[in-house]
Image 1: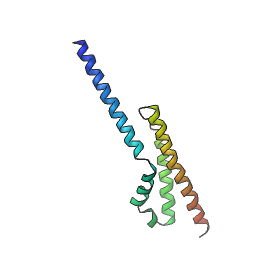
Image 2: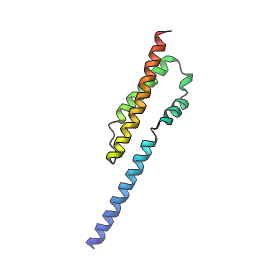
Image 3: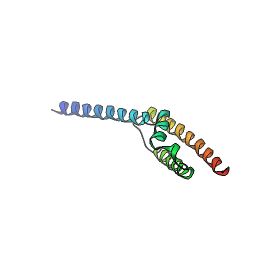
Image 4: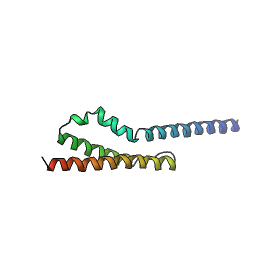
Length: 106
């Protein structure tokens, strides 16, 4: 009887670990470079006035910075997660600088 319980616990643990890996992979995939384009396209970024673009970029950078606190299931997933977020933060940092430059030449 105790052996059956231990097998059941092991199966439950394996299912949880597998589910965690899938969740991590899904999160990492959602933050690839192409998603930047899709997000900007979806929110009609190109049609926004300059001030709204600046607000949107600031908001996105704050959100991405908060996401860095999220823990993933494995060290490898955590490393990939931070890399993806850093890539996106790098893009938005450059976009922010460009928008600020645009505001000074108006």
